[in-house]
Length: 413
Image 1 (cartoon, helix red, strand yellow):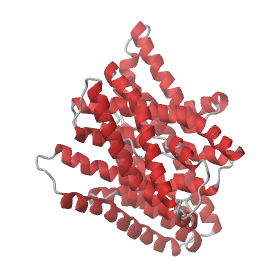
Image 2 (tube, one colour):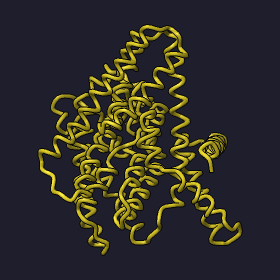
Image 3 (cartoon, rainbow, N blue to C red):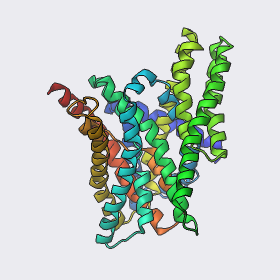
Image 4 (spheres, one colour):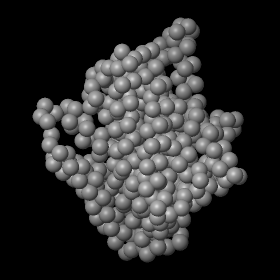
């Protein structure tokens, strides 16, 4: 199958599932298309078991296996998704929540990673599976980044406070980059034959995170200077498009954090670029373009997440581990949110249900699955992939569909 055929099928399926969701289910688009894809995957598996349509499941699996999900997400669409999200974050709102977001995206992620690792190490031992602690840490790192896409739309619909939206959006933008850097550091430890020192780990982290931020700032400023010299929305949209993909590819090549670079560039263009380098007409077209790109890419991503069920190796003990991982991840998230907010309560007030909403609204998404798929082939990889997939599906379908009621109940009290 050619690349064009693959894109055609993905667009056709995504459009069809989006229509079915909009017409009948009325779920948020991302959640709806994933739910339909999951049901469709289960139907394919059932038809294969019944042997009613021979070869159908094999054809679907072959199609999915031809897609490098890790490459597609981490080295493809993630930059565009992060840029599109950060483009609409107001720096003044972000500045008001800067310390809370910083603590959540750093201390919160580290806490979540270590707590999930420690608890799952004992859980897996109790189940008789067993997994080296370094791989438990890898699972903790890849399951810690949150995906705000579905949640933010729901929060807007129920009239959640702006400060809460900013916390969730800001944290998720930066914890993606931080968690990916932690994962890369841990993977280097797991796969290298030498024992890295604390200094080398610190330097690697600073190079990835700090280098990504500085490069994103430089690339965003370069695009900003170009935007100031023209007043043609078609050219300016192309400049933002080039900024996203060229800077992401360059950051990847330099082995610095491309996700953090995309976030910083998006914040710069979305604020200084919007105010000082774009006309009203250009701003409108840039916003509409990136909203559409965001919707299309998220639709494709969540459809693929649903279809990943076809290529996950099912094992009863791994599935049990995944089910137990759900409350473990939620508990780690609760502690990872409670401690930073508890520290910040001395400086500012929070809404009574902030911890509940941030905990339950911390959905896991495509980044977690992509990181799991990036692990080298091993028994640990298959176990981690199954656990990750179970947690992500529960997170999106259960937490995603109930977070609105939780926020609404909090607003009514």
